[in-house]
Length: 124
Figure (cartoon, rainbow, N blue to C red):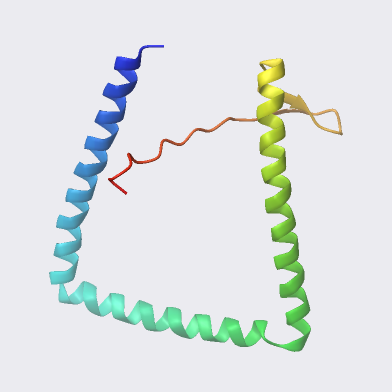
């Protein structure tokens, strides 16, 4: 492992992100200045608001409230199970040095370990 290469790559990624930020600002400024775009944006926000209101009315119906509750319960259960599974797969990978595991049907399933580098303290 070459620590110099890692540091250089981190710096390059951060420079690219900063360049993207600057470029997006230029584009955003041009969009703000364009009246045709602003009018279309306003109309789309109004339509999105109407869509949201209608959806909320439909979901608030008595027959749908139970379904919405069941969906939320299942989503919470899935999130918990996925967190546990992730920890188990990391442990499996460490012990077996393999990114492939057999499921209960006998199918081989590949998995991916993902790493995220957080911003340096002080730049948050």
